[in-house]
Length: 523
Image 1 (cartoon, rainbow, N blue to C red):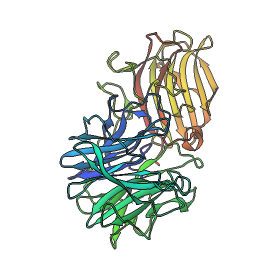
Image 2 (image 1 turned 30 degrees about the vertical axis):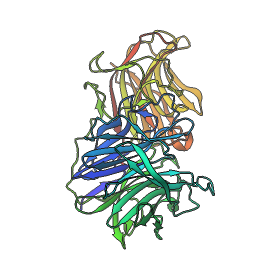
Image 3 (image 1 turned 90 degrees about the vertical axis):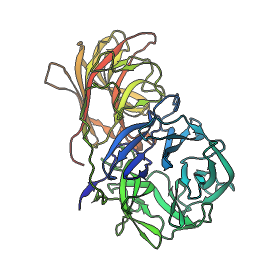
Image 4 (image 1 turned 45 degrees about the vertical axis):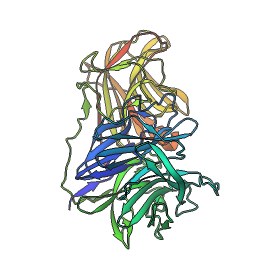
């Protein structure tokens, strides 16, 4: 039997939702303050996935201006009905107000429609069920109408959606408040019609260590719902914080074309202590059915690092190259901006074969839209390098590599003009306070920068383009500042290319000839 390795999507890809259309599988995840929003993936075997692009790839679909870290796009759900794909999600603003909307497409690779915003749709984590009788049901969570009995006590509610008008119609119905009354944070509802039953799968316990997945069923979409006596059907909170996979939750059931069942869920892999730099990742778990209830990971009840692959023909995609030479007319889908990009501050055509970033005063250490193009950290140990062509002209000009969890927790390796000298600096930003860990004098225009991690031990280096000798800035930097456990929030660590200046109104730029990322060991 063929084996597969978890996670199936490594790095910050939380809240997975997936569908099968014929023999094709499509998956989306949350994206928070990063643009484009909602990455979408395609698979033939549930194990090997390739990114098609993003669902929300136009500023008209997604305005993230000024959005604080870990707000923005939460928990999308993807569904398919009569030739149309639907993606429904929540936009969370800085006041934590929730705005739910959906977009549609006839091709999952896009393009997707402009948002259909839903009025009077409280809460987060919306999902859709297209029922056999033609009705469409919306589920989400909200504060219970009778009030909260304990902190983060939430209610799962249902209402009919008129897709033709884009409006919720009829009464709102409270359908379940979870199986674990002390767990709190009932959310992430997915409603399915399987056989004669309506199954309601939800997450409980918050998205931290006590995360869990529970289920209920009913003969009617509006209930009453019977909670499964075997709940929770999946959790790792009882395994302790030293277990290699933690905070398991937010599940999605999916049936293969052969009639086998699987569950996608999120979880994290802490390392170097209970530190989760990689964020919440996507995992795959087998499911069987007993007495019309799902049994997740039969006989074991846990998410394993290695398991038997689905009974589907293996369909591996070509492996992405470790190095992006920026030869394509468009950025590869692994790249993101922080918030919606405003202005023409990046180009692949101004200097063909390079990514050109125009210097902006927008700081990556602020809630802003900096001149930054980045990708997810996907391995506990890795090496990232970039070749930079740049000549600082005025005080404050800087360009280089940034590794960040958010605006207040990051490492920056920058070549620039600082305090009257031109040098390469390594800056650590922790709890919003900056400390220059190391600096090297340099006055050329071409250099290569490297960031390297061995678990939570991070090293930072540079060399001239013509030199083979690396100069170390630091080799024992503490990588735990890039974890959610130190920095807070819901995202995983990013890294990428950055350019900044002190004053607006100038046209100066940095060229990145290539960027490479590769794992350093087998995990």
